Length: 556
Image 1: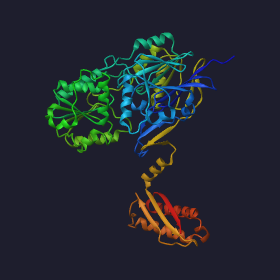
Image 2 (image 1 turned 180 degrees about the horizontal axis):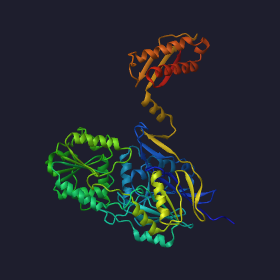
Image 3 (image 1 turned 90 degrees about the vertical axis):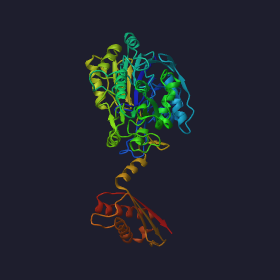
């Protein structure tokens, strides 16, 4: 008799880290499964550890291998950490994509803004809609979050139902969109929920997240009380916040000028999809200078300190159209994502030095998280009563705190895992049953490459200790034809004793060459390696660092 199908789950990104989300669900047996993917996001490079890397993406080699069994990709919402890798990676998968209207429209706008983006079709599903994707019946359940149309995904199968929460919070008064659908979540619990795969971002924070409506009220008071010009920076995708800022400007009799391409794109999509209905028209940057100081508000990108974004350019006084002066105000209606503290701090300090008043969530309620705190996590567990809970979307601390809370709430089985774990959800006893390949890909300029690529590790070494180039021409009898060429990049000119470092390198090259037997001089690879080692050792002795050394032997 054939064994019944089993339902499995494997995170390929987003577990043990925040960002780069990709989850897959499998239905079938060990020999063949149908796979459903949820989200395909990025995280952002860190200049210190990954110089030159803009984006980090999940390694999808497993899905490429299983491409014929991949029935679809479902998007919970349109944040970069959930859909930012699609343009680069979808051509390797070419599976159907399912999303609601706003996510699909924002994705289309993102494709239109990219040079040479592939044509990627998206099937639009209504909010609260259901669709059969292979053997999975997928349901989009509205949840509150910091972007329109965030959805938890209920995956209905013959084995049982799983709730993949995506990013969510409980906000009874969101500025726009539907609140989290408690009624439908309770119905899932009443019908019997096999597993809850849940957001852990704020599992270390007690209480409940404040409402967007409270932030809107606070921003209105601040804008009304401001003297001079006001700039507000927030995540471009937070349309509720854009709406709140527009309402605050209207109440203070100010015109809104949108500054930054990402913000312009989201505003356009939000207007097309009806999320800014009734909101006044915004003005172009070219009109900013024409308004009196107390009649204008600049809505800017750059809340994370991005060097090319609008706010950084304004703070450095090199924006062609938008300027701020002593006595003006900047409101950071955002939180600093871990890793961006230095960049944001530099902008804040630059503004303060110019006499500009800076307002952040440290001193006023100008931002709330889009993720659930501990009481909200308890509510979700009480409404859905899952048999199994797997914490995702968080670092190790967040995952373990979410797990501890779930056990305290009486969830029968709780499993913590890492990217690449293959977990059986049912039928029968759930548990980790194996591993699938998981890792990282780097977006380096226009190229997507494996995290093991030489380029990044070499770049890191060069950033730390520079590079030395040596070129040497050798005749067929092993004699030196001309003086060696030596070039130093990123290396101090002189030692502490005042010696020229390029002289030290030159001497090391000459003495090594002269000390080599003639037979070895005729072997270019052996000679290059001997010189490379000698040069690095000589520089290390005087500088305390070993640079990369590239030796080119030209046989004449």
